[in-house]
Image 1 (tube, rainbow, N blue to C red):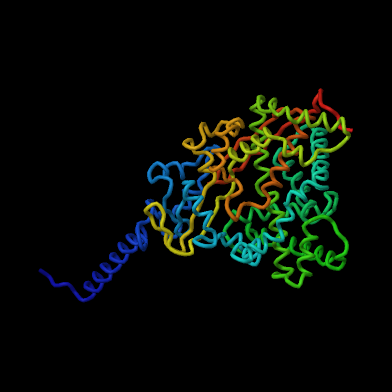
Image 2 (image 1 turned 135 degrees about the vertical axis):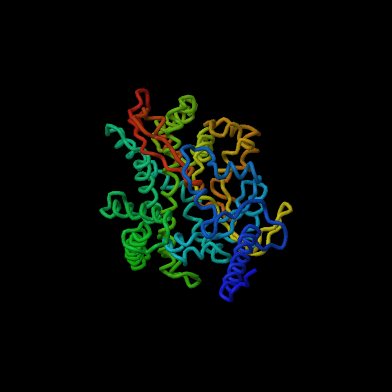
Length: 485
């Protein structure tokens, strides 16, 4: 037998080492280090993990296959990896409630790099610890019932009434575009006091739309990329907001009844913990939050209402409210909004069926032990409200638009599994504001108009996100509507 030459021995040794390293890498990737037992699941391919499976589009509002297959194979809690980051995905409401209860103790809010860049790391820092409590303390008045139920209810009604009148004057309207325009006008009025007739309004809205496109891109800062366009839009918006804030600070005695009043007051306080740059990023974030999800919720809601005439017919509580307004020659009040019991169920159902938030991410601050599993320190946790809201074991016949599921004791029990605005200490500050907008829109819509579908309206998902195809309707004045004086 011929002896191996030295070079052959070296090559054989290198091959053995590489093979051993590769096998070890594969084993360690499939079985990450953990002081306990990890949830079941697969870490996918190196670097990309299971990102491609997560982002595979699905031509339905139903739970995508990514979740369905893993739910069947692993249960409501499983491990995976997205873009090289180890993640535990939760579709388990018991675990979700545990996580929400332990914010900033066991779990910390986490955002992808694109969001940190587009909205600013300073404003993102408001999500943590004492800074988060400070932020909520001075931002809460913006959405407090006292501020919602005073002059702003009237202003919101005026914008919605004017928008619907404009829609009815057109041959047809594209619903999501029209909803975004209407809600943007409401939001900038509430946050920065800008009237919709302002020349800068249209350009400002375009820039915020670029924000959203950038959130779904890779953080590559090269001209022509969506991320680059988004960052350029950020510069434009920052300059506009800084100029506006400087003008307000120069005349602090003048009040506008918007969030900038609170910002100016806070910046001039001796106890201010933040600077102007922080406040500018924060204001941008609040405006974006006002138009990021609600237009899609209302677009999907309009599609379901079109196909559910029984629900529209059941919204008769609005006729009673309108008749009272006519008799008293008044506008809608906060008390009347709180009276809209069936409307609130319709809003819940719109939010549940659409369920189109990007998911709720947290990062573990230490090893977390739950249900016999360990989630190691530094791992991400993804809570999918969509996977809960469309789970047939929780919501019977989940793709059916059924507001009546929310009534009585059964409806009350369902609320513990309903998280469109998060939960716990980080429950969305703007939840009541969002519900009020939708309720006011439905009030004006069903009392004064009818509509018919023209074309479009198909939906598709990418992970938890929903993208409605252009949906066109024609609006008609309601023949028997009460005309407000």
